[in-house]
Amino acid sequence: MADPFRLTLSSDSRFRSLVPDVASRYVEVLGGSAPDAEAVALAVSQAIRAVATEHPDAGPIELSFRLNGGAVEVELSHDGRAQTVTCLLALKS
Image 1 (tube, one colour):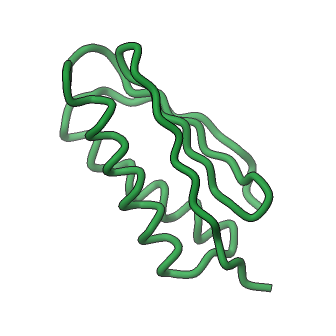
Image 2 (cartoon, one colour; image 1 turned 120 degrees about the vertical axis):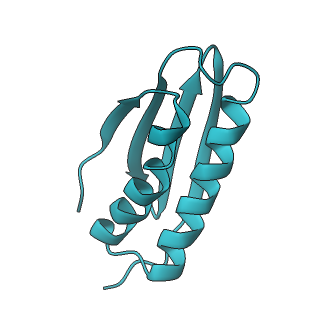
């Protein structure tokens, strides 16, 4: 199992594009399937767009990744806005 971790990155769009890949790899390390990894990456990408829309260059984006039961949770915050992504996983045994 992968440990929870935090990631802070610039809100610059060049760096934002890295997060979905990090999210999908985290799911793979947890033992999730390729469709699970894609679903989490998409959900995280949408959440980043949602929290960084109003002030895209206003400081860093903070992310916190963790496994909670059978789901991946990713908390995102940027410029006072926050969102949590929760995706159930069909973990491989």
